[in-house]
Length: 160
Image (tube, rainbow, N blue to C red; front, side, top):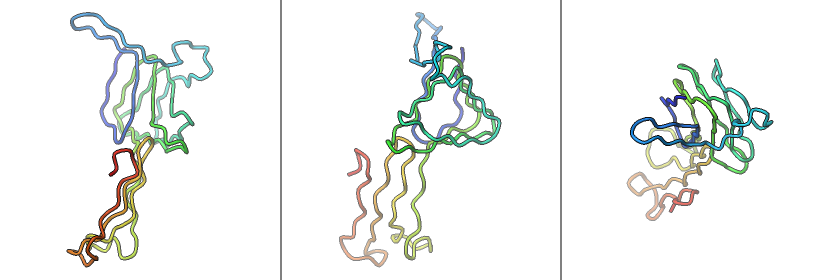
């Protein structure tokens, strides 16, 4: 069993059965439902050959026998209504040579935003799966705004 990770953007939890061979022997069990091959929640082997966009299930959990993302392939997860993080559990190998993306969207242009003048790009970016939206931008007096027009807090638990 091997685990290899090359490129991940955003927040993602990967869980696989790992065995450590240096020093004392220890085992890690992922909790993947694929340990029982007859379990209907097991999605089998994941190995896309082209860029793939995956909608999130309500609980955010994907159970595979193995999870492979080849070089040059991008896998993007789309946020669900419950905003659960992506959790990938495998009963076998994890090999990521390509890209796994759970990023959100960047802030959108508003008003005269995106004209190269800093301080007027006020719309927050939208968080990816398990992430939270950013806060509204401020408008500093240094860039023509009124005093006290501070940026807003992010929408997550630490956004303050």
